[in-house]
Image 1 (cartoon, helix red, strand yellow):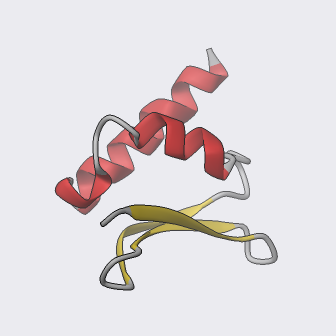
Image 2 (cartoon, rainbow, N blue to C red):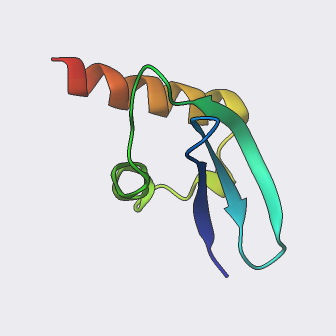
Length: 71
């Protein structure tokens, strides 16, 4: 029972999916401006399972991660 990150390099989008139920969840993250790496997102969410977060909470976490990178 776990989750993974799926990244479409061509369209520059990232998303989450449950690898037990094979179901995507959360918002689509448009990565064209941020250039976030899958490992970076995984490390950020490792202690806070994104399956337990709302779409807005995931979006806010990603936004905070991007802001940290800019500082």
